[in-house]
Length: 123
Image (tube, rainbow, N blue to C red; front, side, top):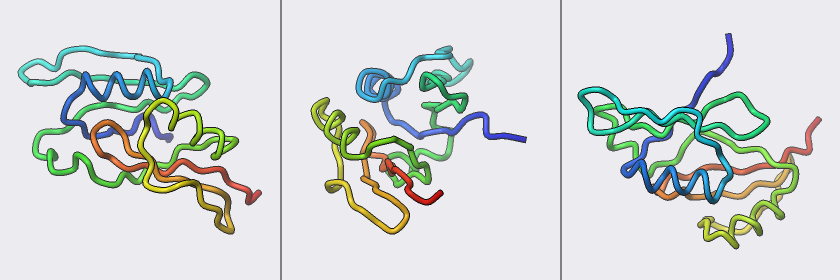
């Protein structure tokens, strides 16, 4: 068993799609209409990875949009990632911070969802 995808609730799929592809470098894997719904099924992948990020809000879960997500992005250099994404207009809650386990920064997406971007030093 493995993780196939993680869903990120969004209010505006077009805005979120632009954010994740243009600012974070994801590629569109699937973008199809959902029959009988007012949204599409949008799957994104980051080159070199297999887990899909799905920009979709399940009916009844609209209150989850803009909340903290229990998802951590990994990077080899948090400061470099922070600098690059800040230059692209990505919002962060604070500058990178060092902890005993590594360095991290909290990032906001176009929908207000908050994610951790981290670099572990515990091996």
